[in-house]
Length: 82
Image (cartoon, rainbow, N blue to C red):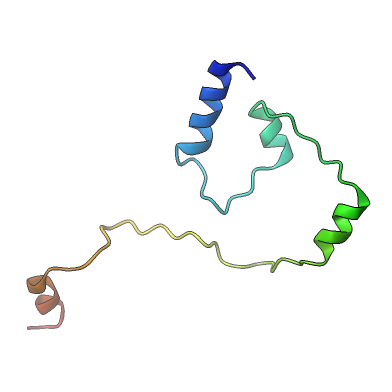
């Protein structure tokens, strides 16, 4: 891949468009310019079948829209009703 396309791809993949737990489909990866193959040998499929993944889980990344961190002493006091 030419350097200018690689730089653009690196920016696209790292600018925060997707969370780390978002799978990029083979079609989307192809649209991004990546060489993609979905052909897997049966041995690989058999190996993957030994490690089933849970389905329907909640995402592992959560967005917290407010500043997150330790509160100051006056703020803790105010929140406790004092």
